[in-house]
Image (cartoon, rainbow, N blue to C red; front, side):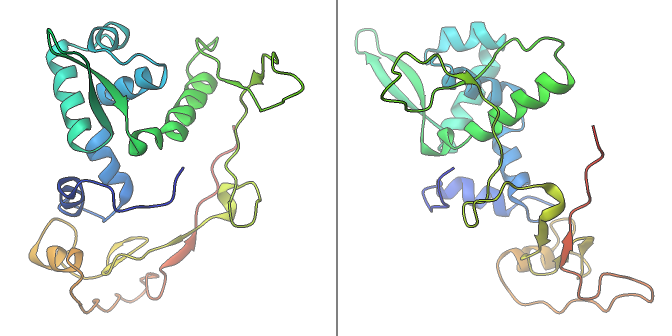
Length: 220
């Protein structure tokens, strides 16, 4: 995945900051990708199917819903249209840089579905490392791991902490009254204005707790 850039369309950035609840990039991403036809359309683009008829056939999406999803993905900067015919005018869809950055997400969903939902994986991703001495190497099934680019160590959930950077929020929720539902206080905090956090109630363990270890996931 590429480092963060400011290439996101201004409308998408504005929509992300206007969401209710905890300021969170997951919520912002779900605003764009949370409808299943959107992710299935992205899947087909990764599979090399760029024309509307093939995307509609392979996803099973109603054509009007798919049209709306592709339009929303285009407005969010995830896909772009490219003309392939002038007479009659026809376009096909391609992933942008932001769209290609969704590859780890689609791979993670595929791996999770294979493990928990599919008796036999219907699709297998094969890894083809660059071996000049073996150009015909068929590769091997992909077994990807999440690795930290800074230290090169494979990442495990127990080793990851949360660092809450949103003013007025900690791990448990809002620390200032009115930050949880799009209220004026919440809007001010999202705009970067200062706010005084409320004093924790007796026995409240939120005081000073903005960086906490993630819970260990249950063993499979």
